[in-house]
Structure formats: structure tokens, C-alpha cells
Image (tube, rainbow, N blue to C red; front, side, top):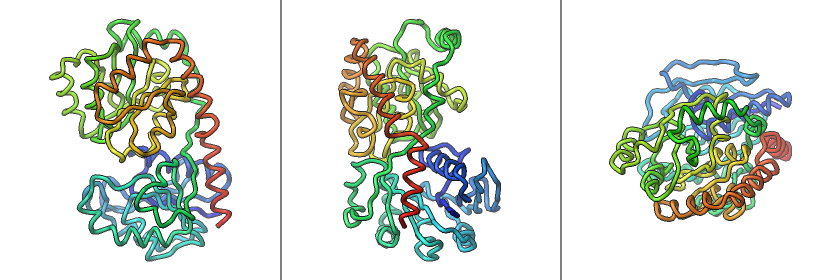
Amino acid sequence: MNILHVYKDYPPILGGIENHVKLLAEGQAGRGHAVTVLVTNPTGSRTTRTVENDVTVIRAGRLATVASTPLSPALAWQLSRQRPDAVHLHFPYPIGEVSQWLLRRGQATVLSYHSDIVRQAGILRFYRPLLRRALAFVDAIIVGSPPMRGSAYLADHQTRLHLIPYGIPLARFRAQPAAEEMATMRARYLAAPTTPVLLFVGRLRYYKGLDTFIRALPAMPGHLLVVGIGPMAAEWQALAQATGVGDRITWLGEVSDADLPAFYHLADLFVLPASHSSEAFGLVQVEAMAAGVPVVCTELGTGTSYVNQDGVTGRVVPPRDPPALAAAIRELLADPPRLAAMGVAARARVEAEFDQDVMVTRVLALYESL
């Protein structure tokens, strides 16, 4: 089968959707399918074509970026030249969705509805009528978690919704690092080797809610490790100093894929304090849970509380509520047997539902049915 994925960015650009597209495309290529990914070129107006892990990646020239939306007439031109069997759109990217609606490439079109458009209200006012047409045109819509079915934009399309949770390669997160490596990391990153380790991994964007975590930190024990970069880094680092917890946070910046699993195994608790529904799923939770680490997340009405089950694999608290976040973390750290049981349950849950091979099989079956 010839499969074409369409989105705005692709690794090495960091992001949850970008990584999902990569895992899905590479998983499909590994099953013997011809897979192309059509995105935009983050470095300029030139269109490039490469082959990366058996996936053809076309990065169409980008003129500019407005409200996180790359403007790329070249993407539509490149789309017009493709001859796929199945086109898989990854929402939200208006240029991609409208281009496929107009050009109608392939025998079937699938759209993964990753999240609502939350902050780009200006673009949404213009795009809303086109979005409704694009959603009505596609043959099937994938949602990654049951709460996403409740999106107002999907209300008229319930019969075409298909639940396929996101999946990742779990094996590299399951593997336990050597004791010597863990001891070295504790000595390097923690002032007191026995202090509880709290971990955050993600892009430092407004909706990740790290400011809530920082404001909660004075009311809980532990040292916070922050993995990630992003536009809020300087503001949140200043907030940590103003809150008096600057010495209890280590800002690690970007961490390589090879080194990341060790940080999960170092952690006693993983925290995703997301503040807005732009956080639609939280694949970092799956990574932590695969390492046997319980999670504290927030209830956003999205997939965060579908992945992490309150009272089973961790705790779920209201967003933007530092006292509630601090109380949940204190509660778990004070009960090591319960924390250990949650870690076991977390690993079992991701192995059953969120493995990359399971996701690839389900998506290919959907293509075939169309």
C-alpha cells in the first residue's frame, strides 16, 4: 500500500504529534508499505526530499509561520504530485487539511484528530467553516482517547470516529539501567542522594503547566528534574527563583533519545501538570509508565486522564491548582507500598494499550477497511 502522511513538522522538530507521525510512518514502512511523509521545511523556502528509516520525507518550502501555522503553497503543489492509496492527515494543520479537501488525493482519507485548536482564536475564526468541510470530507477520523469524542467539532461525525490509542516502542523504556549508572546520575543531579525525584518531560510551552508545578513545589518534598526546551523556559526559570525553589530544580534542556529512559528510571514520580486542553494525550506519561513510574496529571477532559487512571496508575488532579497538585504528590511519596503498586499497574496498562505495534496494526486495519 502507498501511504501518505501530511502534517506541518517532522523530527528532528520536537513535539508529540511529530514523534507520533514518525513512529506510525516507520512502523508502517517496517511492515513493507511504501510510506511518504509530507511536511514543511523549518529552515526556509526550499523543498527537500530525504529517505529516513525507509520513510520518504518531503519537506515543502515554507514562506513564513503565523500563529504556529507554517504557510507553504509548496505543500499543496507537492501533494498534487503524489499518487497514494491512503492519505493520513494529522490535525491541526489547516494548510494540509484544506489542500487534501481540494485535491482529493488517494482512494481514502483518514484524519487523526490530535487536539482542538485552543489558543489560535484568530485563525480559528477564519478556518472554522473550512474545518467543518474538511471533517465532513474525510472517510474516517481517529481519536486517541475516549474523551476526544466529546470535542464540539466532532459532534456531527460520531459514526466515523475510530478509537486508536497512541503507541510507542516500549522496550527501551522498560529496560532497567545499571545500578552504577543510577548512582552516578543521583550524585550528579541531586544535592541529597536520598531525596525524592520528581520528573517533568516536555516542551516548555504555556499549556504544559510547569508554572503550576513550580508554585506547588514549596509545599512538597523532592527535587524536580525538567527535561525539555521551549519558549517559556526563561519565564519559568525566573518564577522558580522568585518562588524560592530555584535550588530544587535542575533544568536539563534537551536530552538525547538514548539517555532519556534513564531519567524515567531515576524518578520516583512523573508529573504532567498540563493547564489547557492543547495537551490532548501526553505520550510522556506512556514513557514514564513503561518504566514503571506512577504519574500525577491533570483532568483536562482530554486523554491525559485516560492514559493515567486515578487511583490505579497514579493520581489525577484539577489543572492550575498548586495546592491540589502538592497534596497528591505528598500523599503518594508518603506511601511507598502504594507507589510501588501503582508502578506495576502503570507498566501493565501501557503494555496492553499503548504499544507501537498494536497502534500500527489497528491503523493499517482501518486503511484496509476503507
